[in-house]
Image 1 (cartoon, one colour):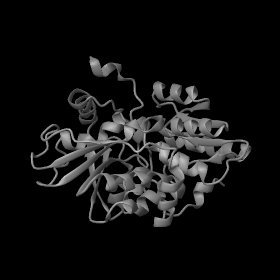
Image 2 (tube, helix red, strand yellow):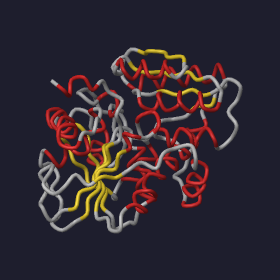
Image 3 (spheres, helix red, strand yellow):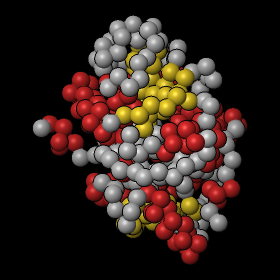
Image 4 (cartoon, one colour):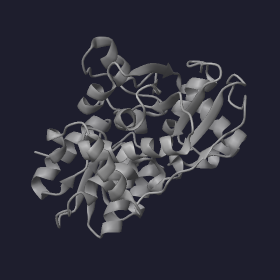
Length: 318
């Protein structure tokens, strides 16, 4: 059984250990203020963008991947993971840094640029028909054969503790914070935010209308399997919210849905207004603001997480 199957939510000590463990392995990503009204917010709202898109391997996933792999020496069979793309790039990056092999299972819906970036980092890539959940099943079967260390993208304590280090940074970088807007796929980043920021800071969880496993679970009061599709399915296309994420997020967050067109519009605005390259999943949180699906309170301080940049930017100049 993979180690992540027996996980619990991270404690403050787990998060502190992750901060110490990751020092020198991940970047302290910058925050920028795009200026009032840049993305349609009330001029009294102070908006800051947290650019996890500039993290190693192009997304926040490097945090959880490094924290997992550094917690104990990986076996000679190396690391193994399933991913829509970003987690696979991160695990491949970590494996290369540690000098161990890696096998990554990705679904056929993964963007070609992401599959290529995994290969460029020396990992063996297996493309599986279907979506992320299908890749995870194939990965689990292979892990039993090889004994490699499995790093789950969102449903593991060490992964969540690693992602929580972004929340620690966020608090250190802002004198005041009222709300954080974050995209949700399997829920690992949002779940990591919960224990790492003050409880009075609101967490706004944003999902595409066509991939909304968190909203479905919140509505049903339990984890619920959904169909997934759309422009951000490669990064936000989990059919079921993670068990740990649901336990961490239920009763703690506000759920917001955005259309595919809103995501595409936000991605282009990030580039045209502030010169930031983001993939569709990375622009999903901002889409909540630019589309009006979420309206910040006047005089509030709001952080939007730009969580990934693994994309082909050529279409941004069209």
